[in-house]
Image 1 (tube, rainbow, N blue to C red):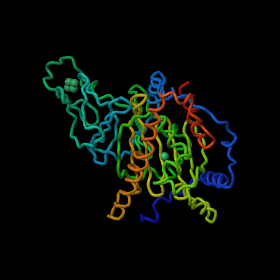
Image 2: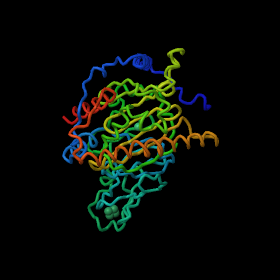
Image 3: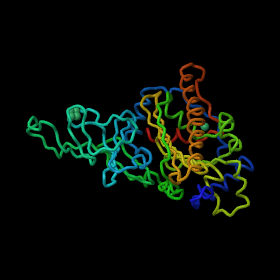
Image 4: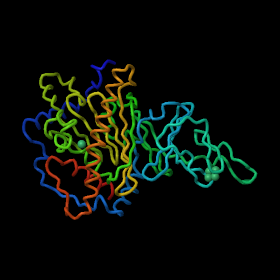
Length: 392
Ligand code: FES
Ligand SMILES: [Fe+2]
């Protein structure tokens, strides 16, 4: 693949309709969003510990979470530990290449097996640092020192607790509850499953990943990626100039959201056949997958954002930059390194996330009885309606 081909994903049939709606929106604001009344969001949604507890139990412990690309463990015979929403998780790729997700908790007295947070490590086996119980990468208990001290032990019942998981579209999806049944990710994604296939997410490779805890409620971060009212303003010095002012079309897709934002070059499609309309080149497609995943389709790479809250005001933000291939020459490497620096350092961590943290600190100030949502921010209403439905 050459630089010129990058990002020309095959067009899913409904993208044509989505682009037609986007062109109509560019010509005049005609979408139903323009009939909406100004709405308000209660600041307590982002600070109340009881609300957070319900979100953790009913969303983050029950729904499948996207734990990032399978490529995080490129080498067979490797593991990676990460604390996800307060749960110590261990992703393992066996020597045969199978990926499983376990609780990173020893079955003897509960010590953590792997401490290198977020770092892929090659391992033959997993040896608990406390008393040395040893597990194979498929989770089975291989042995324990001084076994005569445990006369009645049944080793086959003391493998690592596995979390139900599935690899789909090159991403690892898991449920944090070890007693849950295996997730059906295609059914969970619904119509978005076809989008991810059409954009060929599964053939992308992890180029770089950055994980960082930020002092903001997870919903403030989701919201920053669901509206582009701020794009030409907050991001005026970075990506703002590539976009017209806040032109987009969106749909709730089950509990998820599909969102297409116009770019400056969207107008070019008027002279092109619909088969060549690209949701990466001629617009910026965004998928929000409940509860805490966002896929952003940039012109020649994809950002997956995984949001994993550990407290009302603390969220682990994991950004994986996915490229169509591993860079094969210096020019491509330099190009993607610059893209990563701009988007991860400049835009996400330099502009969006600091703003979310500032909002979080301002929430308790009493300045706002409600946060105001206008017609350009209707995805926030879609998001909160979906949350209300999921939380019952
Ligand atoms: S807690 Fe792991 S061996 Fe004792
Ligand atoms: Fe932004």
